[in-house]
Length: 223
Image 1: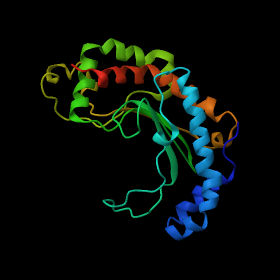
Image 2: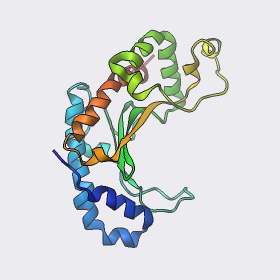
Image 3: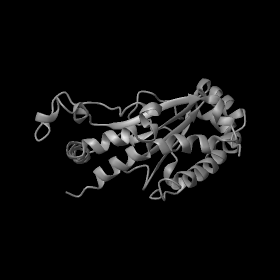
Image 4: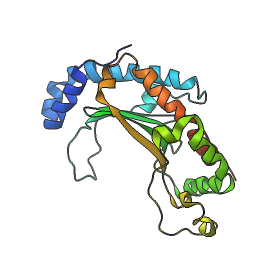
């Protein structure tokens, strides 16, 4: 099924040059027809496709999709709209610290990723503890289904210094320094208008399922 027309890329190219309320109001019906409604239909079908290999995903589209409006209250960038549409598909809500599948579409391409991006101190500790106790399981997940060839490795900001109980293990297990555990890759914009878009994205996400499963076990750890 094809969700987006060629106007998808054109809309965001124009928005980049006209990022203000007046232009958006003039193009609101176009946005709803060419962007908002097709994206909701796409995410609805993508969730169903992901559920085939990750049955714990029960999120509703409205809980996965981000608003196009930017929060400009504390930002130097006062442009009111994002130059993309995006969603985070996880077990619960996009607002929770839970591993899932992130995707956004813009005029330049498709970004697919996931894992854990924003973490509390407690959840950083849980992930590090899981890695320390089960490093082999993480390494297996990073190599299973070709995750390493597709996404490379887990990315994220790092602490310069590790505190106990992880300090003595940091030299041998460098990933313990990380305080984020995410993956991301860009794909061509030409895929946006493809009739195989859902299968394409779901296929990439399936390669990441073992990694998300490992991270999920970590943050669900009640110890």
